[in-house]
Length: 307
Image (cartoon, rainbow, N blue to C red):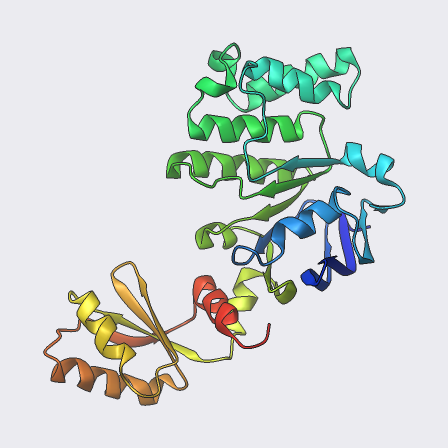
């Protein structure tokens, strides 16, 4: 049995189609990354899967239970960490965890689960601190704790690491892996491509439609829309402006110290790029074809005429 199944989900808001005929299956113990630009339909999909929004058409199940007809069976199985910090600022860490655990659990079990989450997420020194007094990273950690304190089977994490420092992000992802190893299923949205690489599978949604669905490796290796040439230069902005003006260039983007140039054929483009750089007096460290990154693929999908 799959942990999550979506079958031709559609959600309309008036004339706006927010989610358009989306289908996928997610296995128990899988970390599934759900990517796409703002407004693509990620949060709407999550809210339908959690039973917060009714789909216009289509169906979905969580651990075999229909999210519209069996929502009372679904709710205890699901944890949801939303984009916005939805905790009570005037309550302590312990009080927030206790409150959320009591929505699902009897007092004795809630007390035990609250203690477990405090210990596992490292809140021993902060248990009496008000949520309002926590740093961004610790607030996100508390939001995660409140989403999992009732021990759900499926956890929806809507941009769980947005706005926190790299060390806190790494800590959170270590915890995600630990949960997956225990059989929990994680459905994660993120705008960080290095986080997408850490998922078992990823789906990319654009304009409400699912444009790609597979492992990060297969999505990269099977991308055929165009080829990518990387250009390393100390004159990044000058090279960027020059390359954009060249005929036959599909796209060019800055990636750290390099430019990634999308072209129809790398073997034909490399000599032209090198000649253009020499003509403009721009020194180049290297120009070579590379495998597209996840970010290259998703930038391309976002700029396509059709998903």
